[in-house]
Image (cartoon, rainbow, N blue to C red):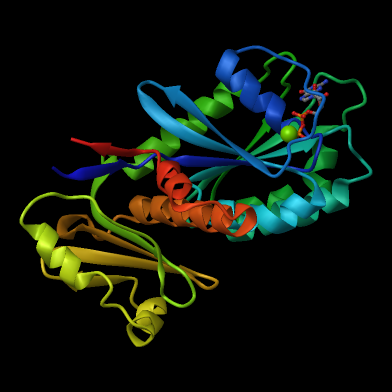
Length: 298
Ligand SMILES: Nc1nc2c(ncn2[C@@H]2O[C@H](COP(=O)(O)OP(=O)(O)O)[C@@H](O)[C@H]2O)c(=O)[nH]1
Ligand SMILES: [Mg+2]
């Protein structure tokens, strides 16, 4: 028995509160417009499928507290990002500009970045040139390594919504290639005293014994090296370690899988999520394990 974790591309939806993020996700899921009255609290993860591929969509709450608390964590580990700007919102142009450029800085290299000049159906919307100038979007043409596109959109009429969705999903799939899963042999989440919060071996073959000996062998000294050494070869395994704050996530994977950027990003997200849940909600181990919901036994 081997445990596979599928790699699902993650698309982060950013933008100030009331820009139309949650409405967009509803439209992507149902193809219809629905007026949404309540602001998103924190963040919300949705799954949207396209041509048999799954995309995890993170709706990043736009209020200032959520921007500070969550955005960087999610944006640094996503594969693509949509930044939604309400083009009738002249007053908050400079705040939107500040956050748009923060998001751009956090995005991983090569991640696709779509900008929505949204609510284009409203008469009070600013001309596109004014938006481009106000947010200094022309700067993007100076950094050709970023895959950036501007869309004039409306969640009400559906203008350019499918066009953007096709563009970003096709680009991400192409970039990630055909590799959509990796084998996970074991996973550990350690707290600041290196006490395991989770320590799970996910295989049942002769390698299990070796893993049992290896796991728990990390001490403060060896974990200190991880900033320069995220992958460590041990026997038939590659050990991938991520540290965030006082916590460590240690994943034991197949040797042949070691250099896949997409995988690294997914694992980062997985860990970030566990880390956040643990911190904010003080939940128990079973809940944490359940939250690794994409693990499949084959
Ligand atoms: N006219 C118009 N209203 C929109 C559009 N997109 C969203 N809205 C409205 O803007 C408000 C805020 O939308 P919401 O999705 O909750 O914004 P969020 O805070 O970014 O998630 C809601 O009343 C939506 O119906 C759009 O393209 N055009
Ligand atoms: Mg919302």
